[in-house]
Image (cartoon, rainbow, N blue to C red; front, side):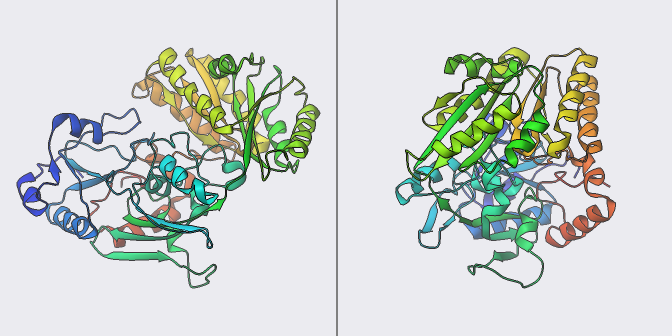
Length: 454
């Protein structure tokens, strides 16, 4: 969708008081956490489903792109706009409508922030397992749109596993109900699964029904220094098959990205960095067997340094999240990638990433979800530069050639849409395009995201 003039007067008449043109607001809500410049002709704050329908019908008539905006934590431009698009702010859609403790389900609006939902469920002994590193700002609707993950996905899986129902509005203005209240259904293909991870390109969630899990009584974190020549793939395979009771997260940070974490915990990272793990237990005193098996598995791979225990695991993940802030200060504008490979190919991937960094002569650090073969390599180079584009291409090609994926959990957005044909194949992409045309025939929903142009 090319650059066009946006008829804001007709939009303001349609949604009086909901259309905002303050430059600072347009700049803030027209971009996300990616390196893209973004932008917006206006910010619209619909408050009801009929508001959304009117907005979509207006956009169809005027051929104006609409960009859904939640917490703005997307790293690949999923919620980044342009001066020719309108940013649709779902920040006010933050009500938890109902919680059914017996069924372990909750109905909520898409703008509910992960951390707010967690606090609301605590007294019921339940929680919503997906926990992206940005969980203090990210929204459940954004989680669903990108199929987000986080450290605890080692045990609980990605967001797709926890979305059991939804209501949505399509790019036609039609309303759609997805999923079922039944515990199982065999009535055709799973349309709900198709919408989870579609990045707002097919329709927008107006309500989500999420499954909940029993809240562990205790969650302890473990941090242990890694030796210089530890083979991460072998270690990941060992831990994945060790049957460690309560093991819910297995994370890794190399030495450059682990210094802040080690300093905060009074632990010097080993030459190979740090391994971080989380053990859950139903009773505060019942971590012993899980700890014993975990340490035995680590020793079998040569990781024999004394571990540091963190009484509350969230403290560990908060510290772990600050690695990005540290890298911001040290590297400045940088490539922040998200690739995953089969566990057995993880060492090949990390070795290749280090070779790419040496060849490019740029600062390098890597961390990620060791237990799932999902790593986040960081390169100290402007991602928008020609050198940055070449480097990113080398990283994505490496993951693809090792039987992996160009996006483990951050989605495709604008940054990686040209890679979807390589990832899924042209037949699959053509099928997705056909589905997109039915759901959004004018291409007004999150234009340019996910699907390659052409």
